[in-house]
Image (cartoon, rainbow over all chains, first blue to last red; front, side, top):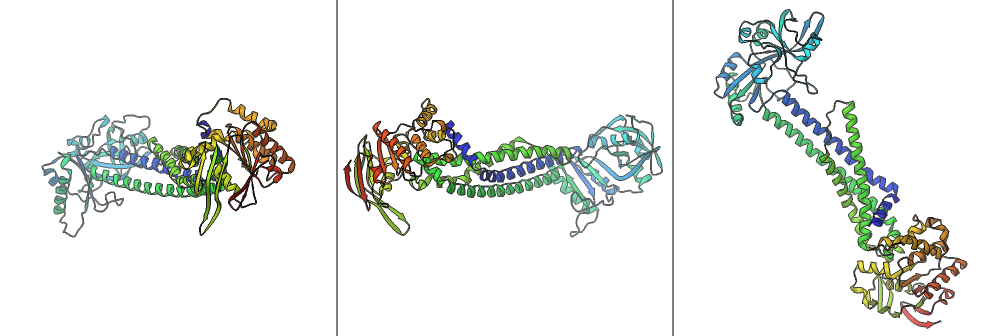
Length: 399
Length: 224
């Protein structure tokens, strides 16, 4: 057995150019595969983390002003009226709702300033988003009713305006020409690659609507329903209500968007599934090409080695011995190419993670699969040449 | 030990069917030293390939130790070639990249059991054929005569009963030829059965019996 393995190893090393050619096809396939899998796994995780960061539970639906695509980058004017809000609140399945006005603003304190996002919200905000002040307190219904100029800072803004002050309570910040008293700093929520949850200033919705923006509509509403199981039906009811209230004729598309955790998950899944099938196709094609290369190289190698096989047959190698020899050599080379591809892929993943912001997650499960695929490809590709080599009659081979 | 009955072999090269053996019967006993002679194309190499189980006859029977080779599978025939037969070819047929020692040990790769001290035995055999100094030289670096001596050592590694030699001196100068024939004759004296194909009458004289062939038939058997 040991001698045979040695023969296989020697055979694989005998023609270094051929072996290198064979291994490089597998190498490139596996390298690409490792990279793509790692990047797609990373992307998926990032999307899920972002969703989680938004505090998007299964019982929440986000109503957004403006129609069109779900995640439109076009900023629409707020078109959800106070009447809409009241009507939604009256729906029997609505448990809570948190309306919100949002605009990019510059907030200053003395010489320091921060470009951030200003959120006008109601007192429902904390419960709906499960997000509370880390220090100080949230504003009250009283603050809301009297349009008081109070604010809560996100951690990022607090750090920018009041460095070294973990709880700048009672300090004053200026937004446009109004002065706001800091009554709290929100808990840290963290950030995803593109989006910093803590880069925001929260003020009462009424203050934002009347004193800053002169806007009586709201941009979006987060609605919490009583039973997440019936989300699909609730979504339909909400849509009907809003279409009626916005007087949209049958031919006119929605001028609002309803987003649920389900729709987001659906989009993510569809995207990752598409990526997955694309991956499968790339993998299949690249391995097929590698396989064809291997088959041809091995065939060429066998015609070159006819005499060698003849000699081996003459000294007692059976047909099976020759087949095992050819298969073994190819599998060895494929495996080496696959392993090298895997290592290079892992190395590149590490470099990508270190030097770029690409989300990369290297998982071992697909690695085993890829190695198996590399070996399988080698085995399958070498089978026809191996059988051909085995069929050579020793007499013909030696002449 | 070897018994051929009415062997026929026809090479089928597409449209043309070339008969190479047209009914050959012969018996070779243990310890015989038989030279097969005849003009080229008379079928002597074909006969030797069939006797050495490198090829199968188209018709006729061939028995080794009373067993019908037609009934044996590839594995059993391979085992025969590995253990019972040894081969010496005109073109030496060594693996050029392998060293002398590795070439001699090649038949051991295809042997299930590995007797102890095989490496020593291979080295001893190479010493016996006069290549004790060149154990680790690659086969391609050797002269023709040296290569043929390695081939003889290889033929002997599994201690076979029959040595098939196909024009063993065909590619050698007369000095080397003499050395090789001395080795082969010595083997016969040690009890090995030798079947040798040659067209050189001087070489054939060393054999105990000469079988003459023409047009795929045996036309005479004479003892020397």
